[in-house]
Amino acid sequence: QVQLVESGGGLVQAGGSLRLSCAASGRTISNYGMGWFRQAPGKEREFVSTISWSGGSTYYADSVKGRFTISRDNAKNTVYLQMNSLKPEDTAVYYCAASMWGLSTSAKDEYNVWGQGTQVTVFS
Image 1 (cartoon, rainbow, N blue to C red):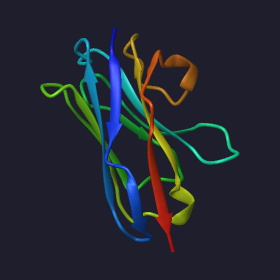
Image 2: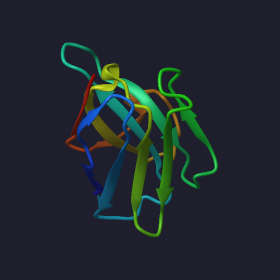
Image 3: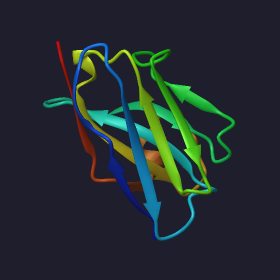
């Protein structure tokens, strides 16, 4: 069974950057599609970005396109989310998720394993 642990969240001023990491343990995620989602207070969890098992395909929500970059290092069993030009509306708990079926999708129901989340707070 795969376990996911996110890190790298914190408090940052608008316009700043953060890099989130998602470290997997238990088994390799090299065949898993991976995604990042976020959930703001009082809102539903929403898709942020996804990356295919090889890293060759990525997809972003319109709200983060051009500012966020997803990547993965299968040798380190880790997925990253580089977040630049952060805005107050990016404030949320960010979750890493894994799709055992290797799917790279924006649909959260296709993900089988979730991390506990890391808080990102952007102030103006």
